[in-house]
Image (tube, rainbow, N blue to C red; front, side, top):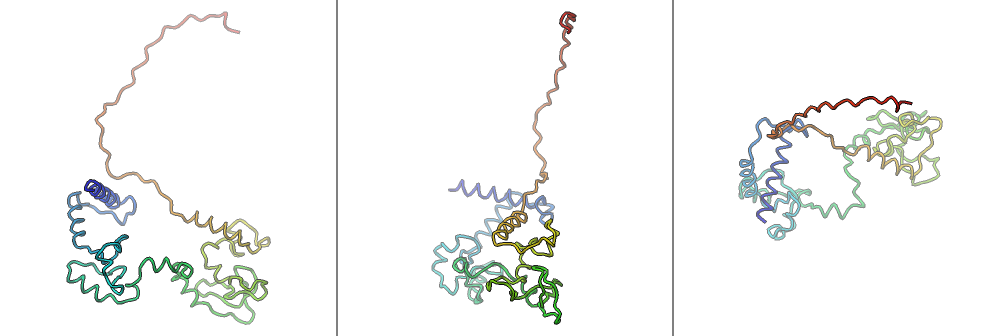
Length: 258
């Protein structure tokens, strides 16, 4: 067990050292990273000051000190860093917000309701305004609409068009601001290599395949970088190739020439 913990500390130091070199992100570059022994002392000090009741890391909720906490004090995280037990007790007593009592299980049990972070969509919902009586052409479906998103400067149906047969049709407003739908609207027909005259509203199967393609495009890729740490110089002498010994020239046989 002690050997496994020692290996974990060594691997953690190598990961931090790789981040401090700046190859992964230039912002993380540190001119003089600490050595392994200083890193181990800082890590040990951090471990002594940490309490599983803060619930910052996976598995903290399984500790005995965490299971004995009342449900009102089982907060998920503490914004301030704790340096002594006195500050810890004060922060635990003062944690009374709604986010302080949430755990991972609360989010897992509400997957049917939660659809991700929609904070960036608030600005577009608030900026939706009606147009004049003449209306404008929707950038998604190409039909006439009477609403515009001032944040984007584009006209689109805020609600489902009345001339659509399906009552449960999704509004063009949602399609236009959906990242997985980008490239399927009539305005984006030229970007996807299709003609606007030949465009038709995509089917659910086509939208699902396009969603998988967009996720594949936006998936982060590993970029190979050259290591910044100098490699150890191997004490290997370069072997010089020995010159080939000249062979004796054989007599040319004219009888073999055709």
